Length: 120
Image 1 (cartoon, rainbow, N blue to C red):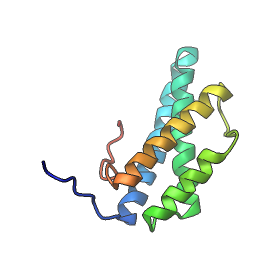
Image 2 (cartoon, one colour; image 1 turned 120 degrees about the vertical axis):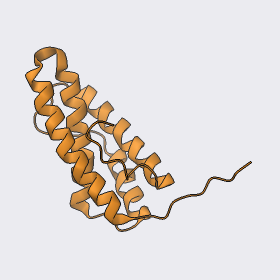
Image 3 (cartoon, rainbow, N blue to C red; image 1 turned 180 degrees about the horizontal axis):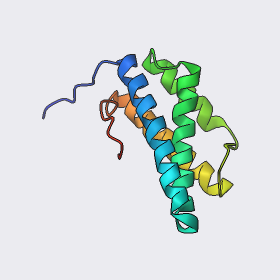
Image 4 (spheres, rainbow, N blue to C red; image 1 turned 90 degrees about the vertical axis):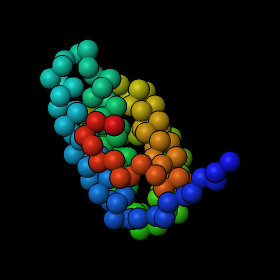
């Protein structure tokens, strides 16, 4: 069996990924809002992604893997999340936690941050 090789942490790549995800999430929110009531959940999901990425960028937590994981742990310890333009607070909280956990998995493996494609 081949042993999995973990990648070295690259803070610049993570910052670039966060920047691209914020832009993509804002674009997805606009698209979802144009879809009307049927796409409100998509809008909340995109807002959750934007919030997580924007908070990580604002904290400047990308230089080390440990700082990113600590910032995400602090985020997940919150009782509730407040963000402008959210349609359903309960769903939004669920989406924030799900996306933050996805980023935790990515950060632990130091993998996936190279993918800056709009749709993921």
